Each structure stands twice: as C-alpha cells, then as structure tokens.
Length: 385
Image (cartoon, rainbow, N blue to C red; front, side, top):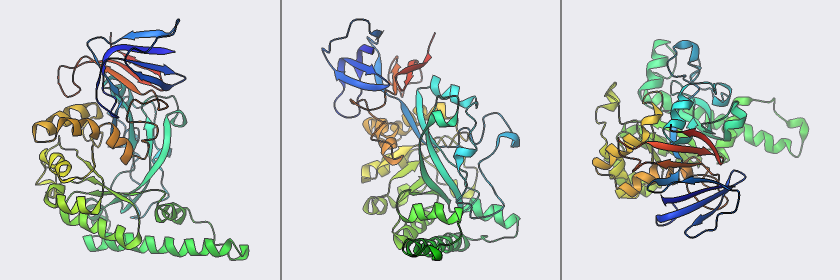
C-alpha cells in the first residue's frame, strides 16, 4: 500500500481536503480524507505543504502518432489520399517510445486522447491512453471517438489533389454520404441477423461508422469557425449522433447556442499564432465565455502543435482571460475525463478510481510550480530529483 499524507488534496469530487491522506492499493484509490490510519509497512510520501490532485488530462492530442522532433518518418496521423477513412485507428500508429510521453509524465499529464489528424473529412478512431507503458496495449484505456474535420483542412488537402471536397458544401456532402451508407449497412446487418444469406460483405469503413450511428462513439468534430461548428451540429441532429466540438475557436460567438444544444467543447490550442484564416479570432477568452454560458469545456494542446506539457500554462492564461479557476481545474481533470468517456475511472481522486495522482509544489497554474511526483495506476512514474 502507498500513502500520500499531509497535502492539500484537490479531489475534484468535493471541497479541497487540508492535510489530507490518500491511500492507494493495487493501482486504485482505496480511501481519501483526513485522519485516515496508515497501515504498518505502507510506503509513505510526505506531501506536507504540497498540492495533491488528479493527474492532468489533455482531451485532444496526436501524441505518438505525430512524433515529437521527427519529420515525415514519425508522422502517421493522416492517410490523406481518401477523404473518408473511418477504418483508420490511431491505435495502430502510436509509438510508445515517443519522447513526448516522458515530457508528459514530468509535467503531470497522466492521460490524453490521441486521435488521427484533420486532413480527411473522416479520419478514423482515436484512443484514450495513459502516458506510461512499454506497449500501446499497456497504455490503452479505451477506443474513443471518430475524428471528423470541417473547414479549411480537408478543403486544402483535396483541392491540391483535385478531388472532392474542395468546398465546405463538399465536406458536409462527403460526411452525409458516408453516414447514409453506414445506415444502409446497418439495415443489412439487421436483416442478416434473421437471414444469414443476406449478410453483406464485411466493410471496415461502415463498421466503424455504425458504431457512431449507435452512439457508441461520438463524432469528434474539428471545427474552428462558428459556421463550421453549426454545420457539425446540424449533421449530428440529422443522424442522431453524439458529437464534441474540437478546437471551437469561434465558439465564443455562439456560446448560448452551444449551451442550448448541450454540446461539449474541447477548446484550443490557444497558445499558437493565427496560422490560417479560420484562426483570425483566436483568443484565450473563449473558454471562459463558454463556461459562463453553461457549456462543458475541456482544454487541449493539440500536441505537437503546442507541446502537451504546457497544458497547465494554457489553463493559467485562460484564467487570466476570464475562465474561473475552478472551471480551469475541471477542464484539465474531471471535465476532460467526462468528455473522453472515462470519468468512471479517472479525473478525480475517489475510492475505486485509478490512482493517477500528481503532487505539486504549488498551484498547477503557476509557472514556478514543480511537479514533485507523478503516479499512474498507483506507480511512481516520475519523481523530481
């Protein structure tokens, strides 16, 4: 057993616990509170004067798929020769030896999503992974989400290839066309359940999209401009599918609409230049405006666009731009876990949840704060020396 004692525990499930104790056993949180007895023989970490909190979670990255510091040899996130590649899986492109995983652990980032890129209208399935493990299977928490892209990226990629889509209309058309094909495939599968002779030939593209139609996976919609965000929601309503808005750069312009629709938004990366036209209204104020309107938000780095170890700094700048500090904490812990579909295991320090815990010298939003320890599944995977 491991005991973390004496710190200010931010559980994310209730009020902070001063001079708290967290007990960890078999990779899970066993108990958290004050005055808990520490069993004889337990390993003890003295966190007096420190902050103890859940591991930080980045809800949108390409870690391991777009390897840090490597060119085309380590770029495996876009199969950019077909605008619809839902059968792709980022799981098959992640390199656990990517040095960015070391950076993540040293910064207290214990979990993230890693998704295909945004060259294609449909890019494939993403995953939620821990940032520690020798193989992807050891890191994997779950497959999560189907990547879809709106706006400039698919237009640019396929304009150069003289293929559809070259317009926003074309992007929406490709998406609808493939969702309808998946509906027809699902009908054939239903008929085959009663008459095996009517079974269609196996189609990996359609199998992946049927999971979206069944609401097993959300459509994770890369969308910066307000009109692209609304198009994504329009199509989601047409097909009764779950979505999240990824980037949401102009979300502040339609905050009330997003709140009314109940669509979660993963905001960022805000620590970048306005590198393309659809980023012209980029601002750190977006997250705060959305949160105040009642939108559930998480924050992202879009690593390697912004190195994921700077996620807490991005949250700190968002606080300066108007995001409530408690909401900022939620945006990199429990909100992120909920949007990533893993809140039953992660995002807070509660009995039964994975012991993904970090110990900090101060506030996670302060530049001078050091990460003292990072624990994943109850194991110390980083210790500052």
